[in-house]
Image (cartoon, rainbow, N blue to C red; front, side, top):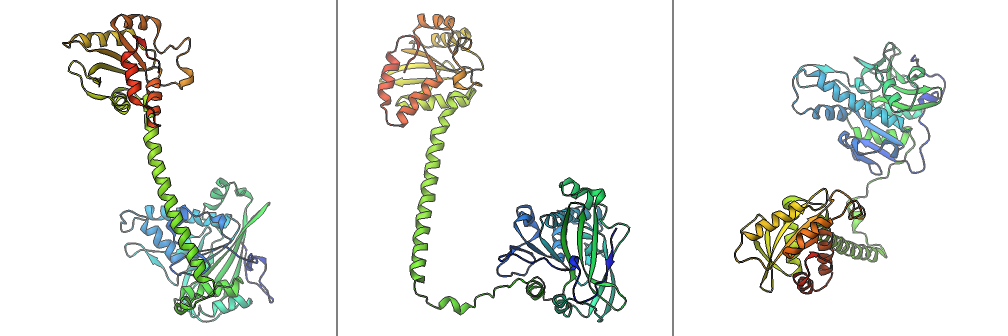
Length: 449
């Protein structure tokens, strides 16, 4: 149950005081106002920012609502279901900010925000608890905290008061989200609301809220209106310095850059040199990545099948120094070396090479007149297995019956892992012509590099 109360005495109770900031607090600003020493972002950045990286977040709520409106691909007049779905997502981000253990300040606009038509909604609906605005103007302010007093002096004349709904304090969603985030037991959660300033009728003009369960406290969240003069940047600086005790560094004037400091030129020269070296390193890395890609593409010889494998095998023979041409008698290719021609058949299979593969190559070779000098069957066998699991006693690359069928025809049987090894040797400087010489002169059967 919420308990909205007005503080008495010279100090706000704990739920109305900002915790002390670290010596160098990490501050996130969601606004159009750039504050030096802080991280400026908009709500679209929340998907990449980690709320736990910050000690304090100041949220200009109008920008939040406009972000939700902009997230609709094609805004439709009174398309409230889709619009409020976006607001629910924004509310969840706000809860994640609170749950990170930092302080959050929400600046409400001094008015209502419209969707694409004449309908309006209360910006307070974006908060993780049900708070609404009663619109009425006035100048009377009651407060007891010096920091917030200076801030609220800029709010007058105020245009609305805040009202927390006792019946739905969590908008019906907070416990579920926090439970999903493993932050609390939703059934055992409560919150304290403290008025920061009130009007003459005792209605809240600003509030602080903390969420509790038996094991932890989440917050505080401060909810205050934007100043009446509309200077959001000045309002944020005032909150940082007067209320939260964070000193905001002044931006350097333009003329400060022209002052020459001893040692500055040397530092700048070192920076320029390091930047040049960094660019050269980046260029070297990019070049090496290209070389690496050229090398690793040959690995396709031991996992590809079909046309990609055939193309890669043909390129491998060309890398060795041979020339190639299409075959007139099959859909494969012919390797030419020192005037001799070898008809090549390429197979990529999930099992061993078969007698059918040998038979197909024999039939194709007899269609050519004159006959080819050599014929070669290149096979990527057991292609789905790692190399160390291939060519075992139960998974032979070229079974004995296949070898026996191929040898009488003078057929060369080439394993693609052997062709890969030959190619990599040439890439690293070996003489490909010598490898081709030995291949064309090799005895029938399985080729050994």
